[in-house]
Image (cartoon, rainbow, N blue to C red; front, side, top):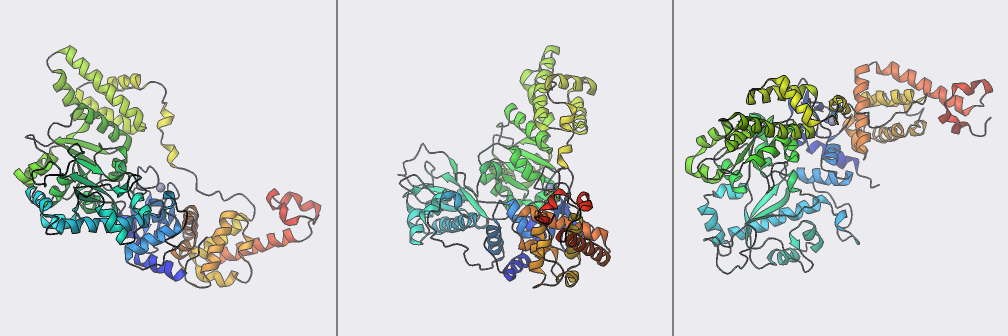
Length: 599
Ligand SMILES: [Zn+2]
């Protein structure tokens, strides 16, 4: 276990305000002295996630997650403790020595530090941008950019660049910079056993995560465009390609532009999702800044889960006529599984959103979004149109059948509560003009009896606390002492001579005690954030936050400490002295090991 300079940890904590950092990952609303939002660590239906700006900690009341800013990043981005420290040091521009030698032997791809990948990606983004800006090399690509009316400002904002045509251009430049081949491969910038550039002769779009960290790239072919030079013989190439899946990048869980759009998404409570990079960029260029793009995939439940943390409503904006019944079915399932309102819209006049914006401007674009149709209605409208169902009774019956089939499939996947289901049924009833009771019966028949009401109860959310505190007799006293020290660190003077971490024999409490006994001698007024900074396990941080929180509610610190201390010392004496036969029944079996050889 690497140890870290405590000064460095607290410098990193201080430079990364927890509200700012967490606010990048979910929308936080003020509630009294705290900020609340939907927990990113469990399937949250009400805001259970609290951030305390004063203490610089977070806590989820439903799943028990909790900790300081380092713990949040550790859990959220699946990083180790040292990696999370590095990530936040980078974020704040603090220079930190590498934790292990860069030239470590036997490093496999799995061991690649995500921070290293992000740094390579930043370098690559700059490299691509320099190509595009190069008066000679970037000339034709810039002509294409100008024809698409992407402004210079947008080129800069979105870090648009150019991959040249040689096939080893990036590789050669990286090697010159002494960037190891294995990092280039792990980042997906270089591919194949003979190592060649992944992106060749393409206009490059830089893909960032919600925090602005560069996680991957998308490249649009320049071959076959009037603007491109002749001679690049890859006509069969896909129009768009993305970075492969890496430890940083997974396209079905990433949205292009979210780093630029999240503020407006949160304040408008609506996220608009388009299909292309240029559609997204053009929307922002025209001032519609709540727009993001999927990365060559359809809109998934993963996307919905991300957006749900910022907004209640998603508008899927499709190119003209690409949104058919299939798209509606998928969106229905995502809506019900993710409990987010989805509306759908098509850009009129055979255009994509980018062309439409250029031709008509911002206001008509916003009107298209405002007039988006709720996905339930959208699906119905399409069915009716396809089946000509309005005209005949048989047609209508067929439409209703198909409609309810689709809804039933979506409901089965959605794990909805009874109340939620009732709300949807009312909505469906008003769309197809059939009584809600009949709809309910029809749906039940379709869903079948496999899923009983209990499966929908949602009670699974209230999961157990992450660590079992055990029921050992002295555990209560141990817990009480730690609670008090977390809430009132200055009382440490009363205990430091009398007990040590060894007196805490419940594993989780022992670890907590170690952190407290290490921190308080060097930082007498240490807050819960400082103690958390000392522990590497996120579930332990959750426990520490909970102990402190419970303690504040109880108050009365001095008296509680004295009582608990007395109880613990008595218990210690009892187990260390000769045990009389009559005492046997007072002890718990788990404590017998302390009296081995004494009876
Ligand atoms: Zn939670």
